[in-house]
Image (cartoon, rainbow, N blue to C red; front, side, top):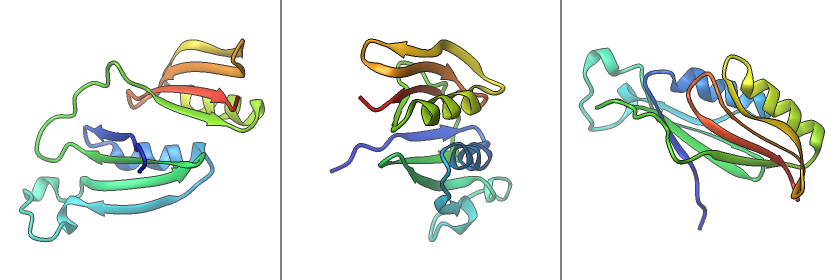
Length: 133
């Protein structure tokens, strides 16, 4: 069994997940637009929204969609934690994610890791980026 974070966006899922795939050096694993869902009526103005999208990276997966039938709530009380194998890889990912966002704890050495930092990216997603061990 795996625990997989599932993010919901207010119409920006495709842009966000494409950005994350670039940050972590991977590709979109699967994508379905709302208008492609079988036997599920979707208003015409929402058919291009993302019903499901996922990427695989750092030994895990990240799932996401747009809020098709409601509003996406602001992410609070949770972060996506990613541990990367080297300090350079972690710091590079941290800096890319921070572009246009807000650094809440600068990336630096900690007693538990060679590097760790927290941020809120330009899509409103909270991240914790660390090195392994």
